[in-house]
Amino acid sequence: MKPDLFEAPDYYNLDELLTEEHKLVRDAAREWVKRDVSPIIEEYAQKAEFPKQIVQGLADIGAFGPYIPEEYGGAGLDQIAYGLIMQEIERGDSGVRSTASVQSSLVMYPIWKYGNEVQRQKYLPKLASGEWIGSFGLTEPDHGSNPGGMVTNFKDMGDHYLLNGAKMWISNAPFCNIAVVWAKNEEGRIHGLVVERGMVGFTTPETHNKWSLRASATGELIFDNVKVPKENLLPNKSGLGAPLGCLDSARFGIAWGAIGAAMDCYDTALRYSKERLQFGKPIGQFQLQQKKLAEMITEITKAQLLAWRLGVMRENGTATSAQISMAKRNNVDMALKIARDARQMLGGMGISGEYSIMRHMMNLESVVTYEGTHDIHLLITGLDVTGLNAFK
Ligand code: TGC
Ligand code: FAD
Image (tube, rainbow, N blue to C red):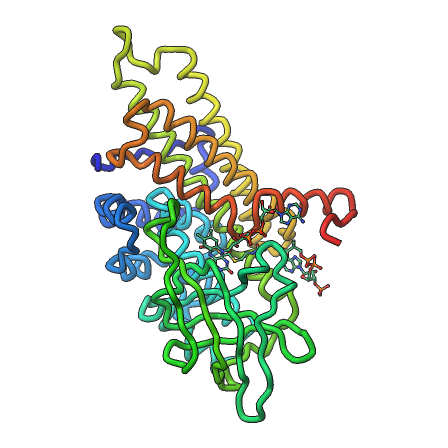
């Protein structure tokens, strides 16, 4: 793979909106990605393997629980710092950002928000340090966009719960130490349970043959009469709103992360357009190529402003779920379109692993689907502006 020459675009001087701490955190993540992710990520994507050696680095840059309080091992940062870390990681690879998103927003967040103090002390420091990796089981083979229909269930057996069912398409599943699993009790109420590797009847087979997110491990979570101790139930929130609340946090991170992937594609295409000569000129001199670059930087700038404003609202507690949906949908779609245009700008080289663009493009095909598909987020916005519910 080519050396990582990335230079971040900042067309509207958005750095002026950031604090010194934001810039320090962002620059540390950027340096780490250049040093430890870019040189190896293409090889791991090609062989469809998660590079486990980067887990410690992710912990060191604060990617595991950026906004979780320091008393639990988190970095204690604000929402914009969290977003900037996700942006930089996804600039390297969406699959690496997936690992960080799941750990922070889908595993640490519910334990922090819905767990009790014993659970927080038991799990959060080990997750923050990367000693343990977590996964989040919501999607099932027959219930993806409609998680409320889930059939995974648990029964109260007196001194323990008995868990049965299966989750599908689960990031980090094949090597997770724990899984936050959403299941219905005998009354049909959804609860979160922490299932630990080693519990009898709990298996995590890997999902193979993915053309996307190849450097992220995806698998199933299978529960065959798993005895879960009662103290592993998250006591402080139940109902579908509990897992959806975690998704708000992860979708916010993705809205930022997608900007990173887009910036990398734009920066690569811009550099290539100045170096590649055809018809005796750099291809960047042709109007059709300039149109692509001009539209890319315009869309990246709009997405940066959307993410920054959402970060301010998320930090002061006023961001709505529908506002988060809009940013996730817009920014991932923006990144996917930029990846496709950037790939074309590199001609034949665009399909080569010498450059990051095709990998970003394929990764973004998952990002546009997980955490709520492009169309589901459109319907969430539709519901918000009309008051009419397309899901009912
Ligand atoms: P609905 O009746 O609308 O809502 C049920 C309850 O939930 C509340 N709620 C929310 N709460 C917090 N945050 C949100 N975003 C919320 N959205 C809804 C709602 O107020 C209600 O509460 P209550 O107290 O009245 O019961 O639910 P619905 O069944 O009609 O479904 C709505 C829909 C379709 C929007 C929702 O189910 C949805 O978002 N579907 C998409 C599923 C999804 O995003 N799955 C993601 C799985 S995890 C994943 O993909 C991880 S990939 C990670 C990686 O690798 O990076
Ligand atoms: P479906 O829900 O079957 O949707 C199929 C199509 O129908 C989509 O285009 C959808 O938009 C459309 N559709 C559905 N309902 C409607 C409607 N009402 N109106 C209009 N169109 C509709 N899940 C987890 O729980 N944890 C994870 O860690 C996780 N990681 C993932 C990693 C990867 C690589 C992938 C690909 C997925 C992951 N997922 C995870 C699952 C992901 O969240 C689901 O794939 C996603 O929510 C869509 O569900 P589905 O695949 O079942 O598609």
